[in-house]
Amino acid sequence: MKTVPAILRRVTTAFRDDCRGLAAVEFAFILPLMLVMFFGTVEISSGVAVDRKVTLMARTLSDLTSQAIQVSDSDLKAFFTASVGIMTPYDASPTKATLSEIYIDSNKIAKIKWSKAATIASGATQATLTNSTRTVGQDVSSLIPTALLVPGTYLIFSEISYKYVPTIGYVMAKTGINLSDVAYTRPRQSLCVIYPTTSPLPLCPT
Image 1 (cartoon, rainbow, N blue to C red):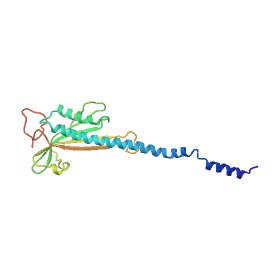
Image 2: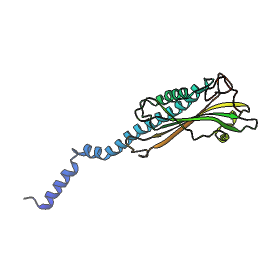
Image 3: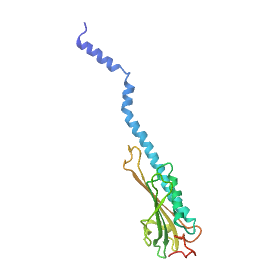
Image 4: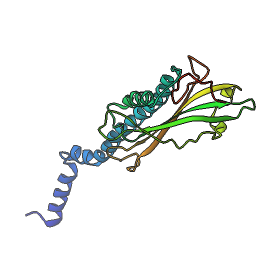
């Protein structure tokens, strides 16, 4: 007849040598880490893609405007709409865009000559023009790279901001991350881009 200690030793030895559940236990330990890494990779990849689109939006907006001699509200609305379309397939509604023309005087002081902003509602296909936070005459010299502060010249200045909110929020903040970028383009067809449109075409404001 086996004694209790002998039975316990046999059971303990058998339990110690039994590896049938080892893989399941290891998987249970590493599964949370695998999920965090997977969703983190997805979130970071999406964030990088959106940030790249924000940069493209800023460049597209200034580039389209710089190709005109004069622009109307309908022109600006079309430019804003085309730029915001770059966000596809991501939601464009968090986008805020501002477009301004800047004049650099003889003292290399850069000031706003005109400015317009736009937003887009969720599910909308057209941008909506709004009043810009930039005001005519505002000194924006600190925002312009030194190499672009050429006296007597104009710049088309676009600003884009976008609040990226991750789907899961495992790695990035659930409240979202503010992404932004700016772009500068010189007028291509004339010294400046006139806004609003008038007839006859006036001289560029200084």
